[in-house]
Image 1 (tube, helix red, strand yellow):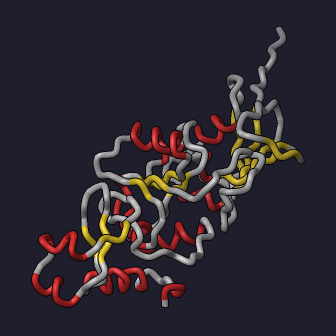
Image 2: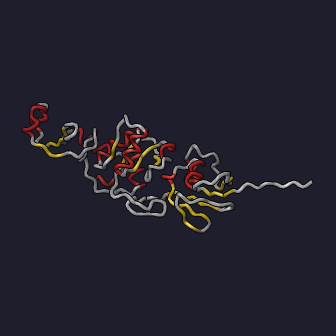
Image 3: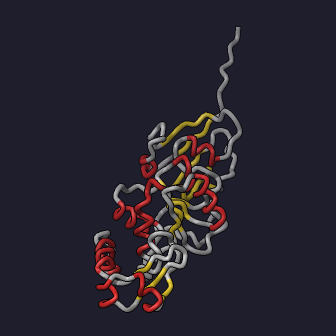
Length: 256
């Protein structure tokens, strides 16, 4: 009596060590044998192994660079490569053929303090502690924003084209990480945005807000800006120097 062994179609997928930081990686070996149990895109296969598509810079099937929609076949060798900083989101690539027109962010609550630092630099960064995943995905799609988050599950959503899984723990380190990763070097328009709601500040005449100022502020300061959305007033008082010092501590030599 003859017995036949059924060989399941499979791939060999190579991941460099840069992807080992993802906790959902079931197997953190460099080469993984993946069983092709059903027809699936390479994006879905890679994400099933714990790596969000936002972190991938290039996918090579055999000797050919492919996009996220590529359907692999039996016995192929797939190499998955990370994004190499600086990541220029304004240029097209095989994986992201439609680049962004400008650098803008939407920040998840798990890295919420990062939003404040980005706004200090004048970088457009939407954030609210009340944002749900749906809110973030909506802003990402409608306003073509880069998602900054530690939530790998959300970063796998197809609505997100550009994103970053923030590795650093502390806000100052997160700021340096984001600036270095996206190659943001300035010049920065410091304190040009409302730290509360992200809107651009506009100059306002002192006499128009005199009734809102404390006595010492009236006496020692003459130049003011205001947020037209939340009506918060800004001037270069002691708080300005403290915030600038905070940015300097982030290792931002460009501000010195």
